[in-house]
Length: 79
Image (cartoon, rainbow, N blue to C red; front, side):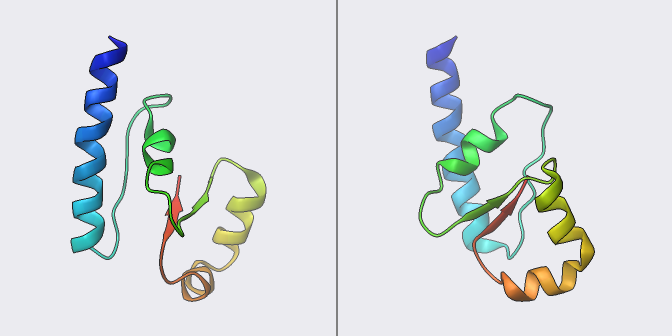
């Protein structure tokens, strides 16, 4: 089963990169513990990941979402 998951990760990694190249916003949804954050971390580079389950990240984003997006116009991932 471990090898199957690695193959799935590679497949979805390519699809995620294609979507990010084409769309200005991409939502990555799934049940808990299915590998969403792990997949996001494969992006590397200048991406910043904000965890909406972490109180401090949630407060920063929910206080003024428009300001947050203006201050972080690119390479931001919300989980």
